Image 1: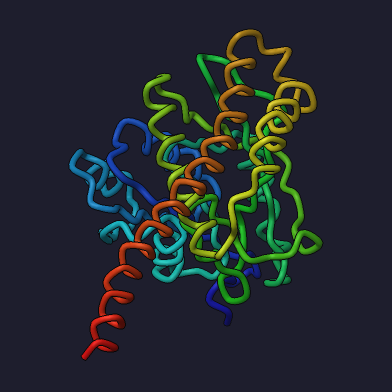
Image 2: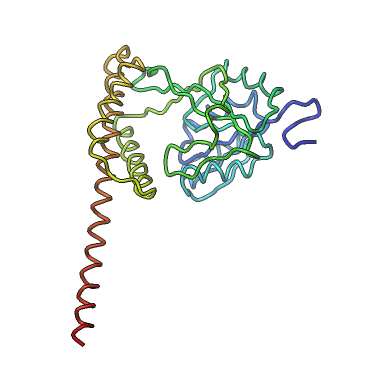
Length: 278
């Protein structure tokens, strides 16, 4: 019998949560998954608060693993799950009733491990739900699909034509304060710029001129944030700034590499000149 089917042929699902110092919110994430989860695995990156204690009290299997990065931590969690079908949720997310019911109904139909399933995630900002949300792959079979190794915005390695949609909403309670929001933007833009440089991507002036305003228009007009008042305008502006920061940080990293190369080239040239004289 397959490790992800029970006696009546219903596929079992392991929920995997990666956590770090979020005891105030992780309980809601865990509770929202209880109706469809056959087990819940929490991977803690070394929290100093009560995240581990809360998770254990709610019946989760808890593993502590020093933070290796988003994608690697998710892979670590899926490797320790009992069942092959993996549902991923973050500590600041909550599965709504419709999505929970949809997943329960879907469990009997999970026959193709090459397929993955996306959900609609809608985030909050200054007390309001923002825009139309975004579709993210959150349910997959680890025997054929796994997260791509990336520093930020990690996604499973599955083609769009193999992704099906699960009705319902994944509420993302990501907003805490403007200060926190800017700190996270700073962190994510650092990681995205570092990833671009590591992949050999060059700074593009055209991209820096075009992407920020296009992202603003996409969020504010296309995604309907103009209907959300000041919070909607702020979110759209933040996304434009995000694109600008990624470009500038990529440019900055490129300059730093050039400076290092020049500082190394100097002694090499001097050494060659000395060797010639001798």
